[in-house]
Length: 49
Image (cartoon, rainbow, N blue to C red; front, side, top):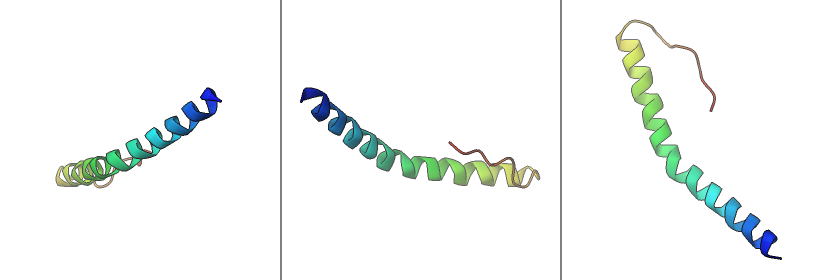
């Protein structure tokens, strides 16, 4: 019983963490891509997290 409740809370926490970190990851990708193109490197390796 308690394990099921803990699993649900863990999933909710994971979803909240994903939603909170998405804008920061998008900004990091935006600025990372801008800095690499400014150096003339074009687009570097695409990294999937």
